Image (cartoon, rainbow, N blue to C red; front, side, top):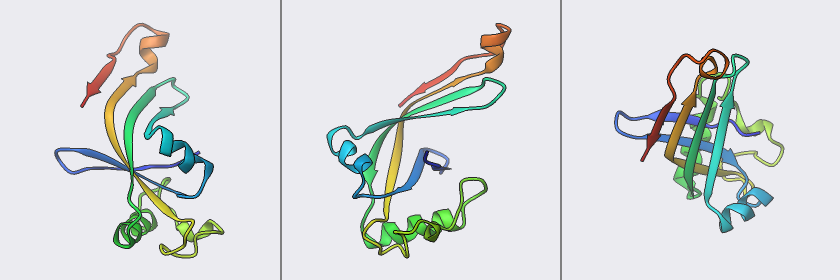
Length: 124
């Protein structure tokens, strides 16, 4: 389970995930760099973000990613050093994955359960 932080700059939505560039996930991304993230809540509301990904593993980007999560909002913000292999942004096992949404879909639970509400979609 990953917890992205999303940022809206007024023009574009960008997501950020902290993960290891030497993990099985990283090897999978070498072959297919697109991912899909799904959010669900007990009211049956579902949001899906299909995204292109880019590794941001230069020292400056890794420091910025580290700080983004240290100072991030709850519940997604956290101190990355709680991960044993991540002592600092310079740790070899620490990486930053940037997300560029290519489509977003919001499906309200009321549409499923009561037939009311609006399905929202966006494609970039």
